[in-house]
Image 1 (cartoon, rainbow, N blue to C red):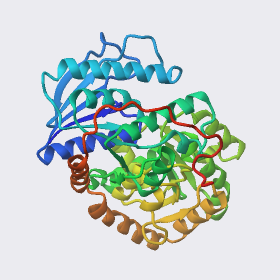
Image 2 (spheres, helix red, strand yellow):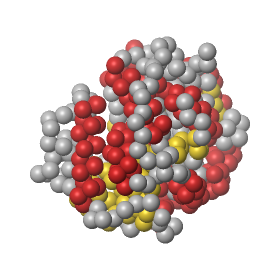
Image 3 (cartoon, one colour):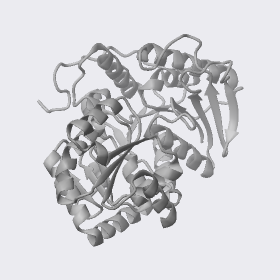
Length: 416
């Protein structure tokens, strides 16, 4: 098949797990004999003088990367306007640079590319497939507190209802998407992992540990965006309890985000600042070393559509402790592939970490089971084949005018 993947992030422009997902999917589809074009953007804050539109083939995948719109818009300040401007550049790039190349399917990844993906599917007369990687209501505990949140939700709703096929990365997200957007037929296609790329020699892991957490005592690691829904504040709150049971325990927090200052202040307030190191963003080589070096990788998310870091940790052979939020509850199985606790439950989090640290032999067995599972359920070849099956079954419904969605007040995810 000829596949047009439309994404607002694609390496080297990576914001979160979405970019890694699209990159791996594009490579695997190409390896399976499909013809793939990725339509994406240049980095935020660049312009056509410094980062012009490029059309290149990387690893067999044709990548059309559009220059950023010349308007002085900032992602954080002007989110909707910035997104619309990006959409215009993607449409222009596709219509003027693809030189008659016509896909069999357009695959949109999340709401930020809803407008260009819908436009291109309409103009080209091909099916529109949409993967919903997360939802605005989900990120805000089922609520849409302000006009911006409602605007984003309405675009998500329109994409899901215009799409000829909707995909989510977990069963939990399928339920969420069906409830929020009133769509019934949602396909579940998991994220995948190339497990071989996350194995690190013990010497390398020891060097990473010595660099970021020198000295004796257990080391816990968190990897992810520093945002409220990732639950790092709960991990910090649990750390004093953990340190009483396991003296000298240190926490490494790898990632960036808007909550960095707040979390540092929380560590000081809880009097654990000396036991916490914020590493910032880590390159993949150091990240893999950190996952191997840690005595446990803790993922305390309050909201998690999938949890690709859990796959990365499993691939590295790490001991996993995770909340049951969303997709994490499907990845980390209590007593089989790791330890789990309810989202936001600080005592439960501390107890789960205690069980992991107190039972190194059991932890090693769980880690082996988690890694073995990757070869069957989370292999990219299998995931690409499942995605192609969605493409092949998707009808072509064509352009449709949709009404504005009715947005209820209160918690949209709690059954009434």
